[in-house]
Length: 375
Ligand SMILES: Nc1ncnc2c1ncn2[C@@H]1O[C@H](COP(=O)(O)OP(=O)(O)O)[C@@H](O)[C@H]1O
Ligand SMILES: [Mg+2]
Image (cartoon, rainbow, N blue to C red; front, side):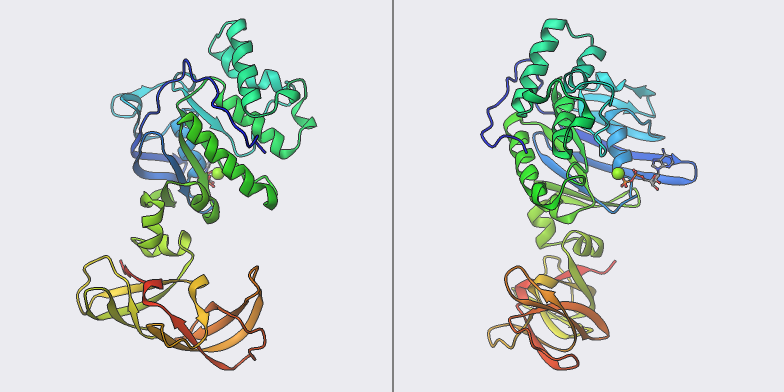
């Protein structure tokens, strides 16, 4: 864990945050297309989480931005500088891009001490011995690991190795920090704390941070902005709260929003809500899009919001069959598998003794049901 009480480490010599632009980035490995025309931009000073399943191209994307992988086509801009352009045959060397990267496996050199690992990027950049010493000392102190300087990576815990990798990425004070699934090697109890520390580090250093993960929770904890990707393509991007509240497509609703989706046809709309005929009955739903009656839509509902109870105040009531109990939740409520409209999904009850095969009523508020385009 990083120290809670962080001071802003000396920023003299570091550059201001830059915006990052990626245009039409494509990378093949033989027949496999790892990146398929990725286009996005990251506002300067923001924490952007890139969320996608394993194998969707996240690491390849970061490696292309860092310059350790060469894309087949596209363009990458950092601030006003083009660091890669297939069209103009520009491919700036990694050490001249000023991008810090923390690799998923940390990639520390086992035969070097912590000090030498962290000093290495400065050696590559031909920094003087005096500067090297003060920069290494400052970053080790900043991350609370100055006491580990003489150790070898094999003598460190996972969390300590991660801080060393972070120190090595930050030592030359890059304005852009790329993090490849940095919490995946840590145990559950540390993940949340390290996430908080990363966030405060990013805020105090005003770094543009791109954080890739396959874990929805981490993306939601950390991302001011989220980019959802799948199979080398951008699926959605935007501010985290707006993507969660109004997912633009089914993939984002289920992968980021943890929603179950039902097919439906829009019946009518009033000023606040739309009424949709779905597989599980008529539902009153939120909608930002101007769907007209007759439109085919999907209704997304976060399973955490599906309650087994009959409440008069809820706009929507759905009849389901209890299939089985899944287990008890941290808040003491019980989660069940239920079936309606031929679909199985989970729902929560205060009661732990609902028998299998029984009929029950779900109450859903209209604000918890969102109409999504059915592309
Ligand atoms: N060096 C490589 N050689 C061949 N295939 C690769 C290489 N690196 C990645 N790939 C393939 O490219 C795709 C994307 O990989 P990667 O960027 O590592 O995904 P992620 O980080 O999202 O799990 C995968 O199908 C992977 O097998
Ligand atoms: Mg990866």
